[in-house]
Each structure stands twice: as structure tokens, then as C-alpha cells.
Image (cartoon, rainbow, N blue to C red; front, side, top):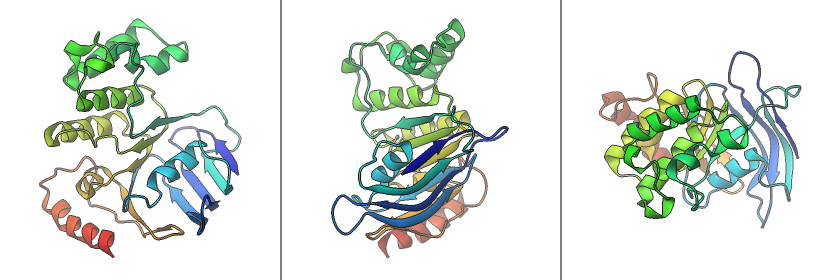
Length: 251
């Protein structure tokens, strides 16, 4: 399989998937799938558990190679320097590092650690209610607090392509909405592919929403909510489209 990672000048790159096939048991999970994730937008994927949503993200990230064929291109073939930020279902925090150091991990690994980055990270921690936990170890945090830390670590990567796998799943309803708003603000110009089980979350955040069904997987035509994300949960247009999306999920 060919995976090309690049950043076109001036905008976030699109992800173009052509003839993607992946088989680990019969029938194949993906069979000659063509799909495009538009650059600079949030694309949301919904579907039943086990339909292949998380596997799809791993294929795009290059984390799976055996049994794979087809082409995945991220941006320009000529520019290989752009990298993808990934947030998995598990928070994957390093237990021996403080909350602040976990958030700053990417910048440290890239040699970009600075007083400015530290202040930015501390500011974000305060915004999500973790300012008092900056020096705490992950083992002292609740599941929702760990999820918030992992989300901030992803947002601090400042990447043009972000893959998110259920990033808000461990949060209470109020915190989830606040984190959704923060994510939409901080990665407004990025290309985001978000896997979620929550139709309302997709309707709040997505420019385009696709439902994955069947095996081999088929992608539905996009559902395009009105207005720009993050949309208010109480917006009548969101409520009306919520029923449409539910109907697609049970077809």
C-alpha cells in the first residue's frame, strides 16, 4: 500500500483513498473503497460497533500494513514533511510523567519545548479545569481527567491532519460539550477525521457526516449539517437532522 503524507501550501491537506482493500478474515473489511476527506474540514464517521471505524483510522495513519492494498494520499506527493496527530480510544498517558509533561510530550520530542509552549499548555489545562493538576501524575486522575489531558496533548501537536477515535467518550455531558467547543476552536483550519458513536456530537462538529455499514464497508453519501461547527446542541436544525441521522444508522 502507498501512503503519502504532505502539506499543500496555504491550507490543510485532503486525504484521498483509492481502491483501499483490507482483509484479516473473510469477507474483507474494505474492498476497493474510494473515499475523500476534504481538507480543512471536520469529517465524522458513525456506524455500529465493530464495523471498522477505528481500523479505518489506523489504515490512514499507516499503523496497519499487512493485508492492505490500494492508495492513501495525504496532501501532495512531493511534500513528505507533514505528520498526522492521532488520538486513540485509550489515553496512552505516560504514568511517570506529570500532566503538564504529558501535554508537552510532542513538543519535547521535536525539540520545540519552550517557555511559550509551557505557558500555552498551562493555559489550556486551566481552560479544561485541570490547572491545579499540572504537576499530578496520571494515576491520580479520573478517567475523564485523563481523557482531557490526552485531548490537549493531541491539540498541542499543531498538525494539519488530526485523527480522533472517540476523543470525548469518557466525559460527562457538560465537559464533553466544552471540550468539543475547544477542539473546534483550536483545530479550526485542520483536516479532522472524527470517529464517534454519538450522532449529536457528529452534528455539532462535522462539516460532513458519513455512516459506515456492511462488510465490505460502504460509506453513505455525506450528510451536511447547516451552519458552521460547533453548532449549538439546541439548534432546531440540528435537532431535525438528528432524526435523519438516526434513521440512517438503523437502516
